[in-house]
Image (cartoon, rainbow, N blue to C red; front, side):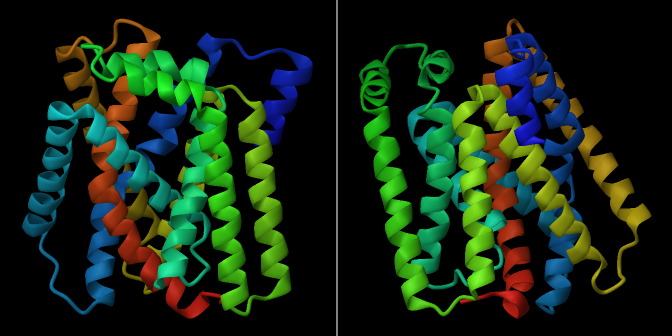
Length: 302
């Protein structure tokens, strides 16, 4: 799909900004939100695997508590909130794409982070002129204008630093762990392909490809496999729960968006969606982290 988008955009017909925006929103509704709507089922399966008692009340109070806490951080200190979101997102993307590696060591966790930072830096910094207006919407007072300018002026230096950090971390990981050659090659081919597509697509289209077409579909495939491994959940039940909580999440997003006048233009809507993703990332990544620990244990390499 990424290669198809790239061929269409570069060689057939440039995809308009409006079309990119529509593709982004449709993808968020159809795949982005649903891949997080299974958190209740995943958490209950995590409890079964950990031989713990699962409580819906405890789950929702804990989940909503983290959501509200992170929303408060974003509200009172957008700068810190964005930095935390980037950190959480980088780690979460790394865990999903590199779930087959042993990452319970320090070198493994650094590998996850540096991988995620490379992905995010290529999406955001390589297309900084598209990202800058979105950053400025977070900074209505102009308090962080100097920092935004610093990012713009040094984006390629930061991008290079992220790339070198990943090369060093994965070289150290490969040197420390005995990996099967096929898995090394497959991973590297996959990584180069993703970077090539993200580097050449516009920011919004690149984020749509990675987060929706790649990350959300990959996550959903892992989630469905994980939930069905013990026969406790049927496909019908999984689809029903994902559909129900997706609808509730979308309705909530729309209500808050309308109340906050966040649908006045495309940029404000994109920022609002990113804010929603940021708030949901904190509780979602912990649940997925527990799931990946179970998935990783019998299949990890290295």
